Image 1 (cartoon, rainbow, N blue to C red):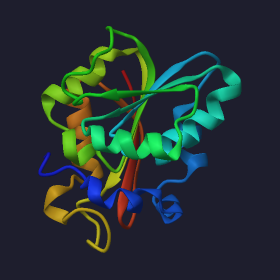
Image 2: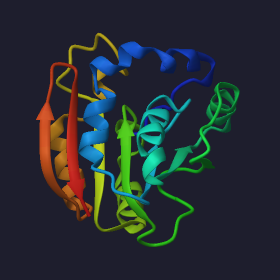
Image 3: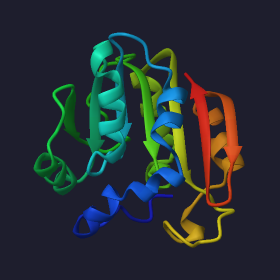
Length: 188
């Protein structure tokens, strides 16, 4: 839908541990199912809240993480906080990723899918994920109560998100609609 991006002036809100009630570190890491030496991208990384979780989990396994955000200001906030050694900051839009074909083993998007989920962006994600690569999407649901997150009319529900992913060539292996959010796990 891409109605807006998150306001960098409110970046400190992205560091709130209350975000774990929507998707926990353990849930995200489990769904990514990372293996030694893999490369993963956080699509819409913001200040690196979830990037840090994946990076710290994967550090001992030699996992490399790209923090992808279209707003350099978000990377500035991340730099101020401190970027882990196994994380590289990438300023790019999701529909024009600077990666080689099949370069990534996995990718994830936490609460940003609604900002980029067009056909071009999803085709680009499919291009950079290796065959069998995993994509984990946790986002605000259009079926939500509009208590947190973007306005409901800027969101997808799990069924529509699944439809978009399937149209882009992904196979959705798992999906769960929740009171305010959904999570989908797909392979390329």
